[in-house]
Image (cartoon, rainbow over all chains, first blue to last red):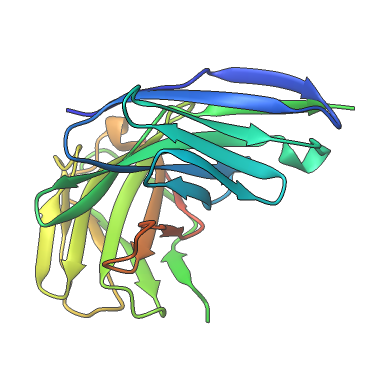
Length: 112
Length: 114
C-alpha cells in the first residue's frame, strides 16, 4: 500500500517563509507532486519532483530525497492568498497506469 | 477550452437511490479518474481509465461503477446510494506519458445522501 504523512496545520505571517514536509512509503515510486486547494475549490497542480533535488517555480520550491522518502514544499514571501490546503501526492505504478495517492493535506493559514 | 467540467454541482439523494455524476474534458486527455474527498481528508481514487473502453479500480471502488465510451466523457454511477457516500467528488484528467502526471481537476460535485 501507499502512505503519506504531512502536518495537518501550519500558520505563518505575511512575508514569511514556510516549509511543509511530506514523508511517504510507496512501492513503485515515480515522483512526488504538490497540489493547492482553496476552500471548496478544485485542487490545482503546483510542482513535481521525479529526481532528487530542488525544483523552483516562482515563490514556490519543492524538494525530494528519494533515499529518505521525504519531500517538502517551500513557500516564500507568503501572501494572504496562499492560505489554502496543500497536498503532497506520490505517483506510483499500479494496474494499467500510474496512479496518484494523496496525503491528508496541510491547512496553511497566513496571518496579516 | 472548458477544461474539465462536472455536473451537477450539488445533489441530494435518499438512501437507496441511484444517480450518475457527469464528467467531460476537452483536452483530448487519455487518462481520466474519479476521486472522493471527505472533510479534512485528502483525495481517494475511486476508478480510473487510460482510454476509451478501458477502466480500472482505484483505492475505494465499492458502490461505484464507471464506463468510458468516448475519450471526452467519464461518468460515475452510484448504484445504491448510502450515507457513507456523502462526499465531494472530483473528476480529473491528464495526459498519458506526461512526466509530471499533472492532474487537471473539475470543480467538483457535492453529494449528500440522507
